[in-house]
Image (cartoon, rainbow, N blue to C red; front, side, top):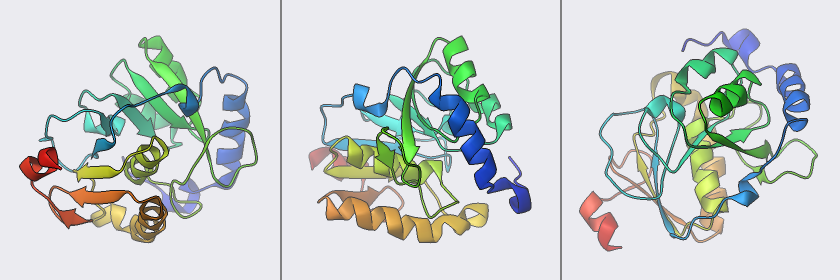
Amino acid sequence: MEIDSSNYWNYDIYKKNSEINLKSIENTIDDLQFESKKFLLCGRGNDDHPDFRPKFSTPTTNIDSELYSTVDHDPKYAEYITRKGNYALSLIVDPLIPKKIIDLGGKVFWFSPDYFKNDLPKIICGKFPRGNSGLTLISLASYFGATSILLSGIKLTGQYSQFLSSKDLIFDDVRKKNCNIFSIDGKLSKHISFTDWCEL
């Protein structure tokens, strides 16, 4: 999806979408529970992911996961909503996104960016105003009590290199909670093989 950055990171759109979405909230991420302390997080960097549960992913990854999440507020993002399942959505997403999820038979669990004042659970998504869905998965896993996180296919290269400073913000926050972050390819964090990960 091509982004016109001159208009894309627009706080007025975030605010408008949030006001609409607040009216239809039934569940928040506090209504979800995960027993495991180890989470596999998948971005869109590749199609080959280890089979480990729980698995969180962005909808663009197009794999079966226990939780999908996005902070993308473009209405065109609805095209990537193709699976029934549980979705953790930021208040800023376009209202077409939750509608499509519900039409597919999925369920929406809401959270708020940390810069809005409301009673919803707060998740750090990146440096305002540029939130990133892949990095948000890390904040979500930490929120659910992860002590170890494995990144597979989350890359901050090319057009995603704009989120490198957000990476430090989120990684620092997660590590303060005594959570370790590993990476299959070793590009964003300490390299670990999937076999070693399973034996942790």
